[in-house]
Length: 207
Image (tube, rainbow, N blue to C red; front, top):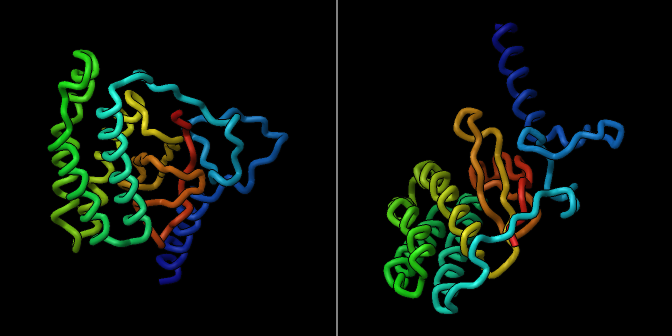
């Protein structure tokens, strides 16, 4: 019995340490930031994080407005999941679906359209799952993980009309990790909500 308790206790320490080891970093270590470095965003200066420029800085104004709306509803979903609010996340999913259905792809150049087409169907599918499962937040988070990868691709291509932070959670999906995007520097983890709200690190800034 004591051995079992000790094993569980030790595992808890490992999990906690994985998401909080930034507090032990000192200047003498001198490590460059990389994807294996777990730090809280509040401890970072922007100059320490990779800055990413978008592929298509100039696109049609109406197309840019639609992309911005998609990203804004993604951020609504992200913030809702960070607050453990599945119903609010579902609203964001429905709104994202609606915006995508109205987006006029004729406003894109042929190359821009090809880029958008690569993520369109998967992004719609994830939005639909999130919109229909307001009472199943675990399922929403699974689709948010894949949605985040597609929105990351979208933002890197077209921008978001604002500064966007690319964050990474090392613990999600049994330690496989997952990424998300945020409009704020502070880490607010959408995969764990109140359970581990600050678990994660800032990987990039997309301008």
